[in-house]
Image 1 (cartoon, rainbow, N blue to C red):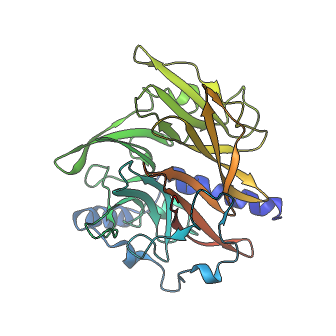
Image 2 (image 1 turned 135 degrees about the vertical axis):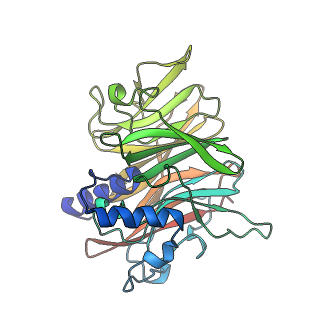
Amino acid sequence: MLNKKIILVIMSVILLFTFGCASENKEKNSDVNLVQNNSKQELSRLDKIPADAIKIIPSVDVYPPKLHSVEWETPVPLGSEINTAGAEDSPFITPDGNELYFFFTPDPNIPAEKQLLDGVTGIYVSKKQLNGLWGEATRVNLQDSGKLSLDGCEFVQGNTIFFCSAREGYNGINWFSAELKDGEWQNWRYEGGALKQKEYEVGELHISQDGDELYFHSARQGGKGGLDIWMTKKINGEWQVPVNIETVNTPDNEGWPFLSQDKNELWFLRTYQGSPALFRSKNINGTWQIPELIVSQFAGEPTLDNQGNLYFVHHFYKDGNMLEADIYVAYKK
C-alpha cells in the first residue's frame, strides 16, 4: 500500500487536472503577449511537450490499471491520436461514442500559472472517423480572443458544454457554459450563480439526461467527511438543497461522478489500497446500492458511452512521482 504522502500527491494531481486551476496571472507582459499571439495561430500540443518526456507504454507501467469485473475487457490505452507523452486527463465521451473530450497539458509537473501561459493547455476534442479510428484532437476554444483562461472538467450535453475555468475578470475557479453553433463553441457565459456554486460548493458535476438532477462532489458541511457525492433536483427552474448520497459516501474522498443515461448507474472515484479507483453503484427501485469496485490502481474520472464502453484516465507513477497520464478504455463484452 502506498504511503499517505503519495496519496495526497495523487489527489492533488487529480484536483489540478480536473479543475485546471490557476492562480491570478502575475507573469510579465511579454508572456501575456505571447499567449495573445498564439491565439491568432493555434499551437500544436505536441510542440510543447518537453523534449525529455518519455511515452509510457503498458509493458513498463509499474502500476497498471486492474479490472475487477467480468463485464468488460481488459483496459487498454487509446492510440496516438489521443495519447501523447504529455498528460491527457478528465475524459468525457458523448453518449453516441463519436466524440471524446479531454483535458491536456504538455507537462504535468509545472505549476498551473505556467500552464495558463503555455498556449496549449486546455480542453481538446477528437471525433471518431468512418473507419472507426479517432481523428486528430483539436483545441476547444472557450475564451474571447486575446484573453487568458485555463479551462477543464468539461461536461457535454447536446449542444451545451459546461466547464470550470480560471479566467480574467473572475475570482478563483468558476463554472461556465458555451453553446455549439455552426460547428464551434460560442457564447460562453458564467454559470456559477445558476448552479449555486458558492452556496452549495459545487465541484465536478454531471447533469442527468432530462436535466432535472445534478450530481456533484463537494466537501460541504453535512457530509460524511472529505469529498462526498451530492445530488440536487431542479424544481420550477431552481436547484434545491443538495442531498448527500449516503450509500456511496464514506469518511474518505468520493468524487468525480458520472451518471448513466438511464440514471441507473452512478460511477465515481474513491481511493482503494492507496490509489484512485473506479466504483459503480446501481439504482434498484429508486435506491442506490452498495458500490462495487470496477477498476483500481490510478484510475480516475469514469465516463461511458451508450454501449457501456468505459473510458477513464490512468496516471503513470514511479517512485512516488507522476510521469504522465493517458486515456484508457475498457470495452463492454
